[in-house]
Length: 336
Image (cartoon, rainbow, N blue to C red; front, top):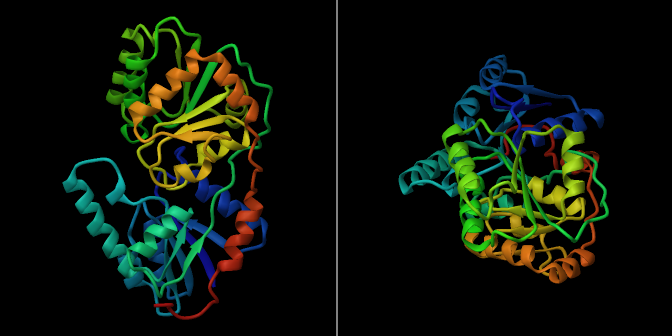
């Protein structure tokens, strides 16, 4: 049976989900699996031919029911779970609409590919028992190694597209409240700056008018692998203000690069942190900003924490592909 990943039209855009899809597909092909990537329209045309396939539909699409209706009984339709619309920041109305969308997709799916323990647990809590749930967590998107760290300056890194869900403005507002104007601090933000231009402009304006932040925030934009590797190497502390992370690929990379991680507890983020040895989990964005400010002002504490950090071992995409293959259901008719 052919394996087909059904992906968004903008699958070349830089996002954690798109990187996961692209790198897992490449690794699966490297292991000899016959796998294709298609848009929804391409998958629907393929399904109409009646040729058996196992489809993995990205949750950015949620278009499982239509594909399931078109595919024959020998095919299977899995949902590739990168995120849950009902758990994203937004209005109660938007979350309720997301929940209805999820319910319809979960009912139509024959199985699931979860990208973290958090997503697997969410699926179980939503009552998908009886349907197979594969779990394949990602590997870092680039090779990383720990670098010597400087303790004189509090060098902080955030890797995130500058969007409301990543909490960038909230973090900057917290730093504006807690950070004194005279401490030795820098913040680099690596991520796309064109998803929400109005939001980016609000972030920039705050950083420029704040006495605590002016001249200390660098907007790097989206970086290629070599530039991102250098960015991890020159910083010592990694901060994530994301409201929820289905996995947290940037946090994983920061751990593999040996940075001290400060994060919020949303979703899978806290699973990357062993409190006190490699990082800390703050209960709120304001507490997160306050902790950054404390470390910026207390060099002795900063040095003590950073000397304790040990880089996490980096898994590989080849290992991820082999986990996928080990969990792949046998070819055959629908599983549910």
